[in-house]
Length: 455
Ligand code: TYD
Ligand code: MG
Figure (tube, helix red, strand yellow):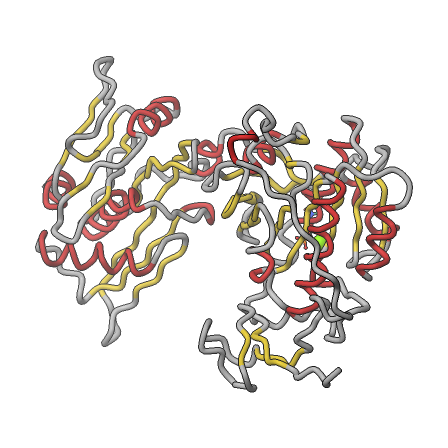
């Protein structure tokens, strides 16, 4: 056999280059291209005789198909993001920064499932068995029947999993530590990570076990990010949170068997992660109601309404180019709102620094937050506090028009539940509840909002 030619693979995005380059032109990252063996475990052996596959008519399947069989953990916030529990025969990737709590939540899930009579194996390539046990003790999970293994070699792990009774759930922590005999690249490279993940996914499909793969994300792109694995698995959950805050958010970014945009909210305590079933109360907990520049946004995260405070500080600048800093929101979107305020509302911000923060380290991705952001900005600039029992939502277009958004009734219901009796929202919003001292101000343009706040 001819000597296999090597290829150059970007460790950040998995793009294959013909020769070594300093910067990957697909993802724009520097120094991420590494030389690897192209046959990396994927059909590198002697040729095999092709075998005919089985085809079935689509119509023949009716009656045969049921709902995907799931293993519910009983941890409500986790089951919410998976869409009702882990699906048998599927693979889930749980990604997140190191130290965010991936191992913690998965050990809790393992313990919960074990208490429900499921067989769970926790394979760790990062910690020794004694260390995992110590954590389990802290989580009150030490007395469960969860099986532990400290293993990094893919073939060994498969042998361990296949031994004796098959697991209902296997947790592999983490894919970056996996290495296979059939690949020559170093552990942590894209080829190794991909080969390892592929082997685990195959195991899931063959045995009907649910597999959870843990993947660390690093900012530097030094270790192969789990991005390459995202396409291979059935669901991808991201664990996010701010080190300065106690709570953590588990977010679905891909799910073949359930909703995508759901979040699960947890709070990190000394006994592990605790479920937070009413996140709005948590995010509004530290509110200072009298200060200008704070507006409460009635948002939606998947099927759940979440109220968060948007804080803005607009101050005269001492710099030639004023600063714009954003935490928890899209900075391009902020620039757009600033431009619309300048162009259509006569609000001059060219000589002002603008800082925008979403309270509690929460991250908003909805365009419906436009109105709350604009309200916070105008309130800060004018030095006038907004009414403390008022929420804001609505999308702002470049023309300055305020557009209706989805789920109006749910947003308002959550607001009322938390004691808000006023709302500023787009004209034409459907499903508005009336009466009972409710005050909904429907506006159709951003100048209306500015007039309301600044008079
Ligand atoms: P861990 O689950 O090990 O993170 P990951 O697997 O994502 O790298 O969580 C580590 C952090 O969580 C660590 O800083 C300690 C903290 N922690 C608690 O605060 N309480 C606990 O009960 C546990 C187990 C961890
Ligand atoms: Mg860990």
